[in-house]
Length: 392
Image (tube, rainbow, N blue to C red; front, side):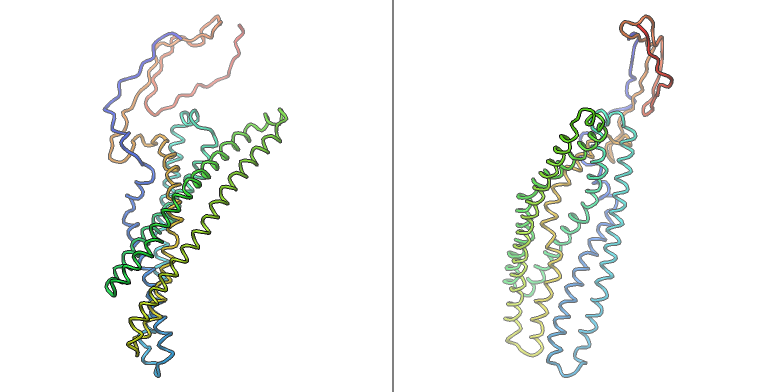
């Protein structure tokens, strides 16, 4: 090929693109931080109302067995109605707020992904297989929509409730607060840590195997005629079934560990309930009278909080698996031309070809002769027309 091919000097400086780490998920957390704070506040309030409902219900059940007049139960009845009606309302508002944010995030992620694939289709196809696109669309984006619902939100709510519960118990009894700090802290921090050490690598491997199945299945389906003509269709099916069997075995080991972990958590929650019952019995039992009704109230008030602490281990394990999805998305080029908010966009380049000529090896004539072309940054050029076979 003769002639000269030149590139213009970039118009502007190149920004510190490499310094930006996550430009896919983090911007959505920052953009909707007020909605996130509102959802967390509603989540904590929901569990507080649920616990208050059980406290007042326990007091009401215990008091109704000994009181002689129903007027004595007037205030507990009103509180039961308030907390009973307030809990589902708060829960509905929390679900409405959180799911609205999740749907906005998922929609934004998919739109951004489509734009990245559309504007960089040539480079992506050269560096990735077709099955990788299915993995990004079906696995990574679909997986990241659970980042908030199953990891961020449950973890933040549980930690806030843990601090509030220990603080409230410390106001009543320092010994009880220290005991709950230790026992409940094992369930809130230690068990999730052990779960991450035991199952995080397995889950990452399982996700990797699933992505490989997406890619292999897509490549083999597109090339199914080659398998059939070569007479190796059975070999392909056997290989695919073996990969699926290995992935199922890995999932079974993860489920077996999860069942044992849940058994340990239930034992820890039972110990917490016994501690509350024992302390309430020792604190209010000797006083007699109306004070004994608080024994059942304190014991029952803890049970709704179990629903907040139980998902922490699963959330901690899943948090590790989101790293691979975020990394795969951040490996894609930025569709807008800027690496992230606050950085200057990449300086554009214009491709200029001046008087280029081309002749096939062994050919007798030029296919291209004195061709000049300028392609601005972001534009595409297509060569249209019939393909002509040249005789040598």
